[in-house]
Image (tube, rainbow, N blue to C red; front, side):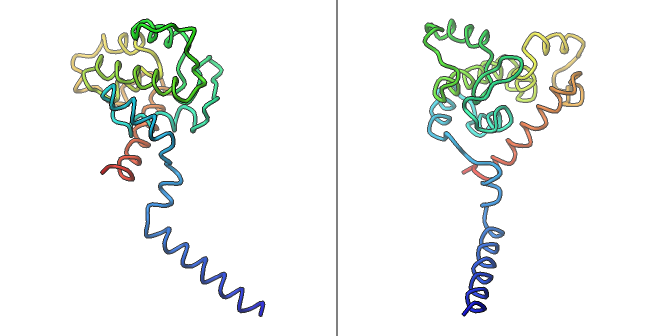
Length: 182
């Protein structure tokens, strides 16, 4: 009886592994599409690819909504309170009513900010992500020395932390695009 169960369990395990191998299951475990409804709601409102927003969330907080950074960034998209205060002014909202540890508020503000950066850098996702990580002022100062934006590459980003961040988000974005693009 024991051996029959063991063979049956091994057979089931083999079938599960085969199904997982032939499907997107391992990828979707590594790159889950959490908070989909909220992400898509604000992504479409602000004109940002929701899969890019998911990549930012994955790399910023690893999907932990109460995440905080040593520098003071909060929530899923790691929005700085001073940045959120500026966003609230742009949106004509009372900053005191915003809770950056709330999934809804954080995704709304983070997505709005990402969309604003993408517009600021004329659709250049790499520069928008660099600014999301290091701040617009720093990116603007880097770009003063560059003749054309078209020739600017990830390797030209002068700070290793920001360069690595952009690489990680773009890698996640490519994975999300491969798994979830319709």
